[in-house]
Image (spheres, rainbow, N blue to C red):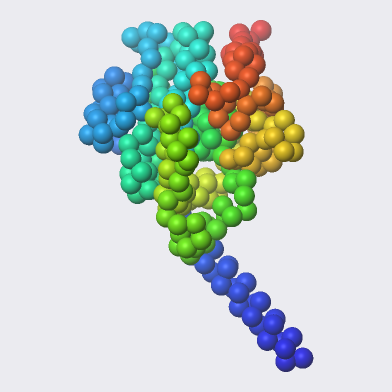
Length: 330
C-alpha cells in the first residue's frame, strides 16, 4: 500500500511539474502600430536597406515585382517559411503574378537570409510584427490582396487572414506548418525544452556536406541552431492560441504533399493541416470556394524550382481558384 502511495505521489508530482512548466512560458505578442509609408516603394527601399545592413545573402533580400506603377487589380504578398527565403516560392508565384499581371512582393522575415546567429536570436514577435506591417503596407500594391504563405509562412498567413479578414481577399497555403511531424517537437512548449534539446542533440543541427553543396543551400539555412526552433514553437503556440481557424472568412486554397502513409510531408504534420482546413470549413463563415489539394509528386517545399513537385497542377489549381473567387457576380 505504501509503495502504491509513493508511486501515485511521484506520478502526481511529475504531472504537476509538466503542467506548471508547460504554462510557465506561454508566449505573448501585441502588434505595435507603426506609421505607414506614403507609397509602397518607400517602404520597400527601407526594407532593402535593412537587409543590406544585416548583410543579407544575395537573392535572399526582399523582392518587388511590378506590373504597374500604381495599383493592379490583384496584388500578391508572399511569406516564406522557417529558415528559408523567397526562393521557396518564386518558381510558382512569379508565374501566377505574371498571368494575373499582379504586383508582387516577397517578404524577407527577420532572422532569415542573413546568418545562423540572427536566426537564433530573432523572436517570434519580431517575425509577426514585420509580417503584419507588410500586409498593411501591401494594400498600396493592388485593389485585392492574395496572401500566399508556405510552411511557417502559412502559419503566419493563417494568423493574418484571421485578424484582417477585410484585407485578405484570397489565402493560398502550401504545406502550412500547424504542428511538428515528431512528438519531440512539443518539448519546446515546456520551459526546460530548449535545454533538454541541447542536452540530447547538441546546440546545432548539422547538415551533410552533400546538402551544403546543393544550389538550394544558398537560400535555406542548412545548419540551424536548435534554439531557433524555440521561436517557431512559440509562434505556433501563440497563433493557435488565438483560434484563427474559427475567424477565417477569406477563400482558402491549401496544398499538401501526401502520396501514402510512408511518402508524405516529413516537416509539417499533414493531419494537422487537414484538421485545420476542416475547422475553417465548419466555422459558419467559410467561403464556398475553399479547397484542399493533395499533391502526390512533391515534398514539404512545393513552390520552389529547387524541389521537385507537380508545379503544373499547382499553378492550374491556383489560377482556377482565383477565377472562381473573383468571377463577376451575376
